[in-house]
Image 1 (cartoon, rainbow, N blue to C red):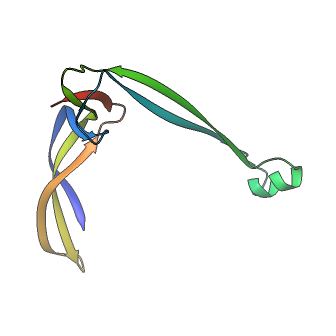
Image 2 (image 1 turned 135 degrees about the vertical axis):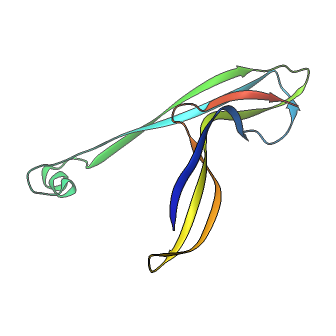
Image 3 (image 1 turned 90 degrees about the vertical axis):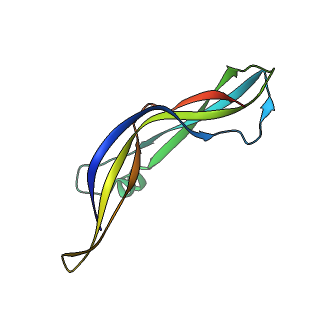
Length: 126
């Protein structure tokens, strides 16, 4: 199957999904993120890195997790949820299904491609 872009539209700040399950009054939300930082030994002398690590008595890789939590204020007078919104490209696409190089069917549909770095957490009210 081959895909061909027909048209593209940028959608800004659109609701993507809810992060909390139930509607409830809340004065704030706490959101946490964990970032894992890792380092791996590498070698450029014709041996594998893991083999070199074993021969040199060092660890082949290491990682450490760091966590950050943020408080997001909310209006407790109304029910809300924590939610995610983002900018993305809505791409109208033609899909050609081929057999032995010959197109046997064509379908059209949308592909949604997030724009890197644009997701945002926000409070959504009922």
